Length: 148
Image (tube, rainbow, N blue to C red; front, side):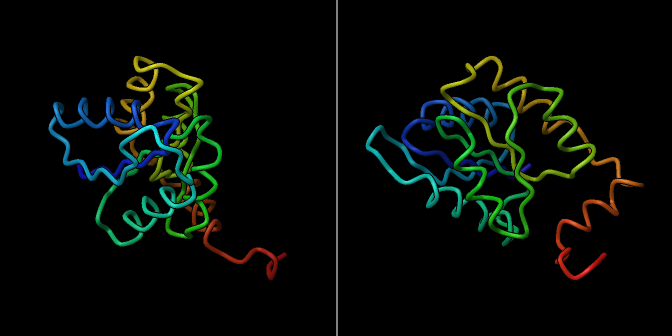
């Protein structure tokens, strides 16, 4: 699978760990930065990741910042992205199964490498269930203000 990863300065170490682990597992990795501890703005990296998903340059994305919150908000500004910010494997699996999430966000200051790998494994290893969930996922792309 082709997976894009992006992080800010708080998340680049975990991003790099995940990228190496995913490469070892045979995935094609698109590293969108950042690659050092100098302060950067997470919205820029969330936007890069969202553009990679929207353009088809990557099938899935992993976003990392200190909490996972800011970068997930940035990714979700792109209507092609359904970014789920999670802390555990069950939430990651449900994000895929029920919400067809195509981007995962984690907080490097909140979880360690082992938990991050477990979360990513659940995310990548779970298929979208479709069925009754498809209608709801389709609604995420609609302007719901105009429908009652």
